[in-house]
Amino acid sequence: MKLVLVGQTRCIPCTVMKNQILDRIEELEALGASFEYINLNELEDKDTFIQKYKLTATPTTWVEVDGFITEGYSGYVDIDSLFQLVEECK
Image 1 (cartoon, rainbow, N blue to C red):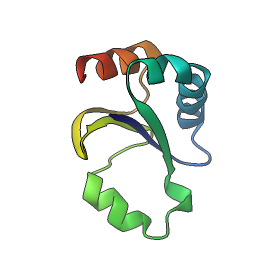
Image 2: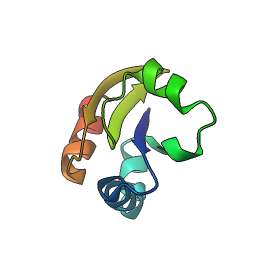
Image 3: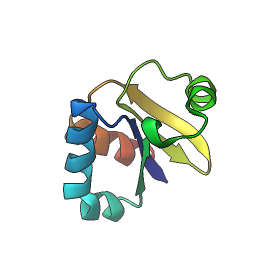
């Protein structure tokens, strides 16, 4: 299971969420999940990625289980809600 956060370099909510997740990474790992941060500004084919995942805003987060997206959020979400989502997807 993986918690994915898609953000951008100058996106303050993206940075806040990323830092909050990293501050509690051990708790996330205890739930059986890893963390992946994807910076849209660093992708070579950003437009294809946006279309593939139907992104409408950053930050966007989702939980991926066995390569499939189970649940997600578009926009800022508090860290406790994210961790609850991970717990529910176990």
